[in-house]
Length: 258
Image (cartoon, rainbow, N blue to C red; front, top):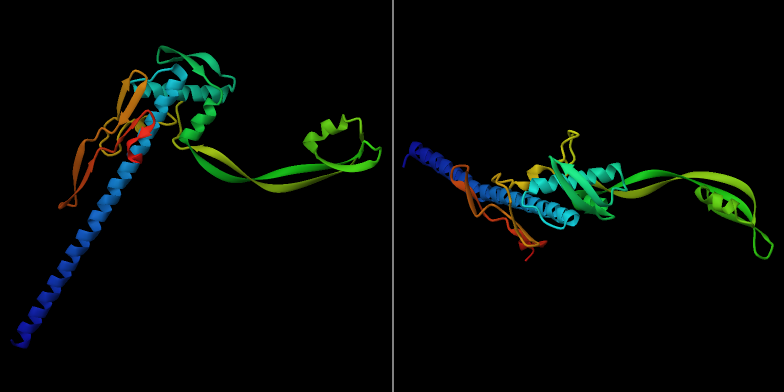
């Protein structure tokens, strides 16, 4: 074989080797990307099913029954939470009118807290707190003068104590305090007449297919399940995203926990 043919053969071999390397890279990399996408859809779908069940559970707490129309349940639950925001005494038996329909409900104490902890993300923040400590002179039961330190907000009680003598001094200082709160995940700019703010209506549809979740009610039992039975969608020509049902929730028991 002369040098010209040898060079051609080597160049051809390098091209083939490079193409094989690319094919191997694609075969290894692309499926992993698709699997990550499948997992992301599955996790989001299960999170939405949990939110749908939670909405139905809150509706049941208020009315004593479940509602086949998930959006109706959502409107009522969010309306009650909004009413509690405006009036913390919106408790017990109440009447709520929505969309021309009247709902007779029973709002338990702590409904707003349970609602926020269910649909909110726990956040931690640091705040600067200003404290004032007052030094006062008091008599002990033995008649001896003693110095006592009290918070200024509690000073009124100390002043009314028969053993109180007088205020010696006040000292103010700042401290950093860590506080936790629940961030409303679905909160958005909203129309004052829109009751789908937290959570919103998108939670009732599968993120992969856009189909609504299946809500099945039997007596006082409820099942929320994925609308997917078998799904396949082409990716990059030679590959496909495939998945089966994302699971179901029956009366709070989730299929993916077992």
